[in-house]
Length: 398
Ligand SMILES: CC(C)(COP(=O)(O)OP(=O)(O)OC[C@H]1O[C@@H](n2cnc3c(N)ncnc32)[C@H](O)[C@@H]1OP(=O)(O)O)[C@@H](O)C(=O)NCCC(=O)NCCS
Image (cartoon, rainbow, N blue to C red):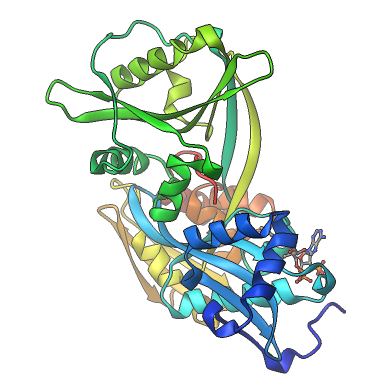
């Protein structure tokens, strides 16, 4: 049995209330192979007030960072609590502390009204055991610089940008809302776009004839031993094919002194679709997970296909958050949904199946295929059109 020994005295508290910052820093150092200075710098970026610590009889036993942000689904931003920095000291591992902490974290998120909790996982089984499920991907693309061919483009209007300018965030928001799973970024994520792991990335943008930003990239070059560099992008965003092609041309102009271009996204990142040939390679860096922490808030916050008018009858299992569980009727109209408790419960999903269907990673029929949903095949199939989008992805990591 792997349970924390004194379960009666276990609580998740604000980091300040843990009264033992050194123990928390030590946990994080051992968990992420960091030195004290690096961990403290990262804690500052995350905001110490956003850390939570699991206490076992007043002793810090586990810790995590909460990152408030949002995530786009069906064109609307849904509030999402990102979780990072989940850590247990080496001598305390295997005693159930991380699982207990994640249970408390999900329950707290529900009580605070967060519709979703999201994370990247080192061990998927830990998070699945508290109701998270695969919800989308983050691929790494590598393309040899000499192979970039995005067709004819205009030679005008590429400009260096001020990384702090509001127009970048506005341009990003319009782009991100078109793709399920992309983040509605808060300061923590923007910091990682501008300076991931302390490596400054420089933004360049394309403007239209009115001066409005139509796209941008954040660029960094990393030299190899032979003196030539790899070009790394922390963001590749555009609103039109013309802007996308102009950005590709900007990047191709680095090719004289570079080997590879590297950026992140998902199967439907539009930059790939502008390339004439498929001369890039793809690595699945991460399959990220979400947890529907508040069923009503989550189902009502996301967008739905505007042409769909439907009533879905769900029967949800969730023993960790009983308020989520039971029968729900989802009435969809004009791209929005209303929920009421009760109904016929035709589509049976557990909390994990709900997460995968909610994000659009799986249709209800596909979820049934892997045991995450069940019900009348016709009802499952019909529900698929309500959640239809593209394959969900994000370029960011947290
Ligand atoms: C991952 C970590 C937080 C787990 O903490 P823990 O308190 O030992 O975990 P628990 O005892 O609560 O285990 C809960 C579940 O996690 C999974 N898990 C725990 N350790 C694991 C390991 N070494 N390998 C694979 N899965 C593991 C198991 O599914 C386990 O359930 P089980 O015991 O029923 O099989 C801890 O090992 C750690 O700090 N690792 C380094 C940092 C890290 O990877 N953090 C997570 C980032 S997302």
